[in-house]
Image 1 (tube, rainbow, N blue to C red):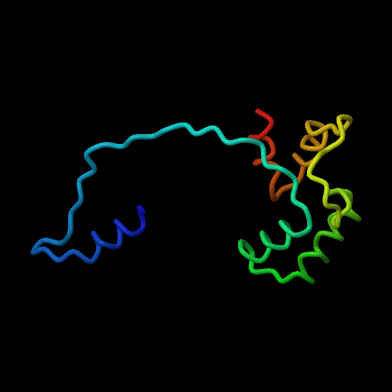
Image 2: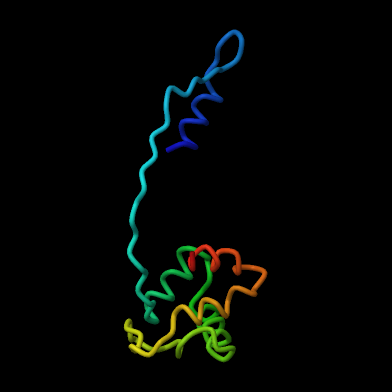
Length: 109
């Protein structure tokens, strides 16, 4: 919505150029539930839609992540973690990664 409004403002023609005045901003906190683990079908759909990755490549990446210890068996249809699963410890292990460590730190706050 913001991009469309900005584009409209840029396209507006006026003698001195287009000017916009923001009268106010309203923000709302939104609670979002914890995501459920992806099963194989959901993984393939997410990879295709969000990343443009085909099924073969997506499963190949999932397998490499599994072999590196980052995810459970990639072809499982389970959406439940065992009670013994230590999510905090798993996240703390990921804090050292330069690519997503900062994001993981935010999750743990």
